Length: 438
Ligand code: C2O
Ligand code: CU
Figure (cartoon, rainbow, N blue to C red):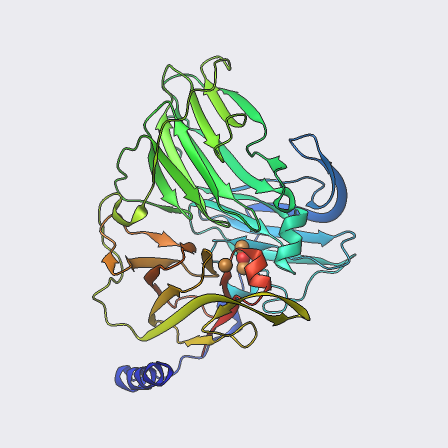
């Protein structure tokens, strides 16, 4: 397979005959000039924090809180974020998960910048070009950083105001080191008062470093408006549907608040979640039997810059697997890409403008939410079945055991990018690689 991939690449290069375009520094950084429309300061600091469950933990925080402050901005704005590290000896960064920012703003220690050490600051500048639900987290030893609390929501609102004000609710789900202690999670019931007739958007963000999370909305029909920060075309109306969000993934669901209470069941725990009603009272309704939401045939097709019948400039195959072995001096499970662990896993080379097809094949026995930085991939097929619904763009695609996904993306954001499993334990145990522009 390696050989044929290689031949394919060189012949394509010869055929389209592009003379190599030099990538300049300006292609790799955000706008260095100009007054920012919005400025945020994130101060990384150790802090003893009380979680919503009441448990007190020694955490690493942005601005003394978990999650860190929600960064809200408007489409098109020039954003400046000053990151300061007060006292986290391991160093920190800020990575804007799902926002396709220029490479130098991506916040990956060891690839796009050095980790910011105690007493140091680093300034990120980028334009908020995508509307939707994103999040940020430190990307210096992500596994430890995210499990210790260095994450928050990032929301980009559309330039134009909606006709009717929307009740916009961010639901971040996170477990403290795998234990059932939660933030906005299943141990606590949160009550909200919402007037009937109000349009509601719930932004489900799974920031867990390890486990997927599921959500069931009870008491109303609803739509899945967006996945991974990208709106879906003509979403179908759903009821009795469970939504499973992989670690790192985001699903936006929308509905019009009815007269009766609506309950978001998080993690199938009858004691927790969010209960919405016209006066904040009401009982938690019984959760019905559900089917799992499937984006592959949801909504309506729409035009995309390429599709399954396009001619691809590059084609890569990634076999996801696990095995026992020694990594970083530990004997444990390794999570492999084409049989190798980082940094021996393959590196994908692309050229600006390429349409790149990637096939993920999960031969292991656990799921892998694959996260590509700097780009969104269009799902073409799963297990040979073509995507027939709305274009499904993803930045964190959950590949279940035994599944095969074909995806494609345009190489339109030059630089050195990470591609890794967002189960951060897997990423730290080998399942990471780079995508690089020639
Ligand atoms: Cu959300 Cu490489 O990370
Ligand atoms: Cu994984």
